[in-house]
Image 1 (cartoon, rainbow, N blue to C red):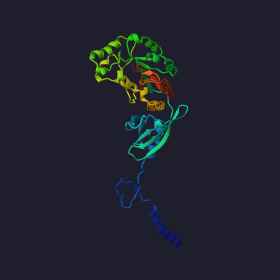
Image 2: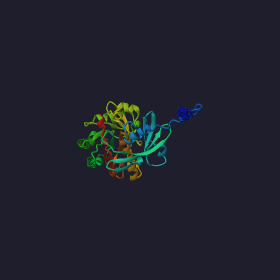
Image 3: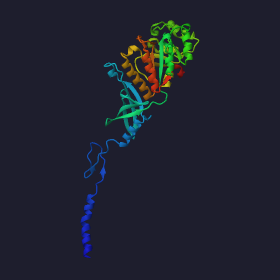
Image 4: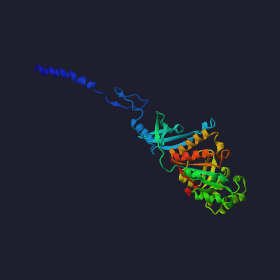
Length: 349
């Protein structure tokens, strides 16, 4: 019996100690508020690891859940000649918003057709950032190049038909002149699976002529052609909304011309008016600058997924408003390397 009384005494001491050693229930408290008296405050995690892991996985797999877009770095445009394109992606996982910035200018080809592209990931609220790299292998898809040549350089273009064929390139030639002056070239170009557009008879600035001259240079001149004309290119790239409306019954698509980089989808091209980027010699001070810019422009089109229009004129080493043959070949070669499609304007009719 004395052993039983001893056991009761031990339990009377141990049980209160055991209860005192148990963890006090913890409650999460909003930032800026004090925890209740006697409670132990546990700060909630800064960022759910599950959301971050999902974002990184989808970025590295180049998932369509990461919506890509681009903008030009206009702040840097006036400071240096190099073109800067900022490609970003937006995604959301587990209720958390993420922004990724891709460094396409720093992309490195690692062998075969794979590119190693650096990126930085940021939580949209500015909570944290993460740097990494992804492998990108171009696949066959709808992204492509819409390449056109303007004016009356038919003999220059004809000399490079074999080069176009070598790379499987299809070109839209916006011819200037009359049906009789360009018929031979147009017939040969169409036989080689190229496309013919119209660029007026005399290349006037149509924003500075009378309505009578406007109609004669565009609608009436086009009606005299027996060959199909897919689209219309504005001389000097200049047009006004009423002019585009006036040509809409004759040409479903008209094309401007400028220095800026633009990406389109097929529906937008069909909508009636697009602007093509100039790649003439005068736009690039040296071959290295040209190649870096073209590679970046075409890689962005493939990576984002879009159709990029390029335009030049004569094919000649000395032409300011034209392109050197080796530069033209670099465009064709890079287009094929990135598995971009060669589009013509007739593809969108």
